Length: 125
Image: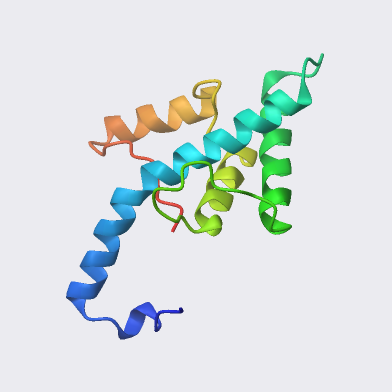
């Protein structure tokens, strides 16, 4: 089933969809982490840096999603594969990492805090 374009929704419908996305988003991040973890385990030991391995694992995860071979691990609720794919793309771009914040990411967060803004991860919507 496809929903009509968001522009045609009432404000109440948009608010409800945004709230649902807030609830489901942490589960999409968890599924993306499962994908990276599984691909890293499949890769095994390597002399390549952890950052390179992480990006390669995310790339392979995207290939699985694109091929229709990705299986959601936690099936209590269906998550759009596109959400997990977008989160994996964030790993590839270096916006997310299991290795901790990169120096540039850390610097961006410190700059935002100094300007009075909170540092919050963007939704992959």
